[in-house]
Amino acid sequence: MASRLTSFVLIACLVIASSPVHVSSSVPLKKGLSWSFYENSCPKVESVIRKHLKKVFEEDIGQAAGLLRVHFHDCFVQGCDGSILLSGTANAPTEQDFTPNLSLRRTAFKIIDDLRELVDKKCGRVVSCADIATIAARDSVYLSGGPEYEVPLGRRDGLTSANENVTLENLPAPTENASQILTALAKKHFDATDVVALSGGHTIGLAHCAAFQNRLYPTQDPTMEKTFALDLKGVCPTTNSTNTTVNDIRSPNRFDNKYYVDLVHREGLFTSDQDLYEDSTTRDIVTSFAEDQELFFDKFVLAMTKMGQLSVLTGAKGEIRANCSVTNSNNPDFLASVVEEDLESYAELK
Ligand code: HEM
Ligand SMILES: *[C@@H]1O[C@H](CO)[C@@H](O)[C@H](O)[C@H]1NC(C)=O
Ligand SMILES: *[C@@H]1O[C@H](CO)[C@@H](O)[C@H](O)[C@H]1NC(C)=O
Ligand SMILES: *[C@@H]1O[C@H](CO)[C@@H](O)[C@H](O)[C@H]1NC(C)=O
Ligand SMILES: *[C@@H]1O[C@H](CO)[C@@H](O)[C@H](O)[C@H]1NC(C)=O
Ligand SMILES: *[C@@H]1O[C@H](CO)[C@@H](O)[C@H](O)[C@H]1NC(C)=O
Ligand SMILES: *[C@@H]1O[C@H](CO)[C@@H](O)[C@H](O)[C@H]1NC(C)=O
Image (cartoon, rainbow, N blue to C red):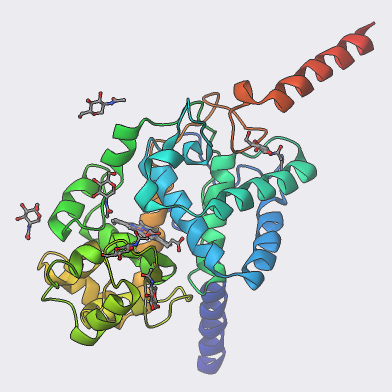
């Protein structure tokens, strides 16, 4: 009996451990979002995206970092409404154009539109670009070795892009210290644990010299580990270098808790990273994540679920874009297809 009970508990634990983390009980959902939004209209949406991204990442795992960051930038500026995906022109610049030194990978936008095309082929135009970006970010985490978790869906795509001031105001700078980052993110209702967990996104991906050379020149940041600083000066010999380096020196392509181990060893890249360990408000949280990867994963999923719901458009608001780079009213192909459909239904009526 006892052994049967033990094996039952064991099996139950295994089942729980291998199924995606579901945070529905701890994070209230914004009205209009749901855990089963496309159950009837596009039941395969998540498997179509997962399958394509597996192929993309087998070629280049760096694309996972690009996709994760796009979702973060989308959500922080004007909400997770796909506005970051809109591409601008010289006369009408968009969010994409206002972050020159925060360079998002152009390939990430292409991948999202490729996903949109695959999903559209399967289901028609029912899944928003904002939801595709959300699922792609989740899969980037999971396929890089991070936690698997469910994301609530039902976002709609925004009709406008944010202006330059709004964009810069909402994206924290890597040169900011922990107290500045905490203050900025508290405005979006993130607490200290959320801030430390979200910064763990830097366990993958790259950064340009411009983002961290404030710690090398004109004077070297005394908190930075000396050999690490020397190596970084090799990568960025002058302040005009366009070189890049990895965010997490211990496991640059793996989504794990090594980023926090870096911070404990004073090998964090940005001021905004390293100061999370220097500041007494966040130091113990950093240490706890460095010691316990499962704890980091749990808190990361919670914070991402919050982030993924920032100012979302739902219900009848916004639209479902036919091309993630352009709103439907600015999309000549879409407008032409609508006219064609109207003519067809007119012909049917007759
Ligand atoms: C807390 C405030 C944050 C600041 C100041 C910040 C700043 C930056 C900067 C400056 C870069 C380097 C860009 C470049 O030089 O090319 C970067 C990269 C990155 N960030 Fe953040 N970030 C923050 C939060 C986040 C969050 C919340 C996530 C996701 C959960 C995230 C995910 C990433 C990823 C994955 C990269 C690598 C991108 C790539 O390789 O293309 N960051 N971040
Ligand atoms: C942005 O802010 C600057 C100064 O704070 C102001 O002069 C400018 O008009 C603002 N631009 C927009 C588009 O709001
Ligand atoms: C953080 O930076 C701000 C602005 O530079 C500064 O006023 C503040 O004293 C700094 N805080 C800490 C704890 O270093
Ligand atoms: C990014 O660009 C802005 C405006 O062009 C500038 O004020 C800021 O110092 C730059 N930040 C970095 C890290 O290069
Ligand atoms: C780029 O980095 C390499 C070392 O990784 C260094 O040798 C080279 O001088 C750097 N180039 C520039 C333009 O900064
Ligand atoms: C970068 O700056 C160095 C001197 O600081 C100069 O020799 C070099 O030509 C500059 N490179 C570029 C691409 O501007
Ligand atoms: C989507 O729109 C962009 C920008 O207008 C355009 O460059 C791209 O070719 C379009 N993609 C498709 C698949 O039509």
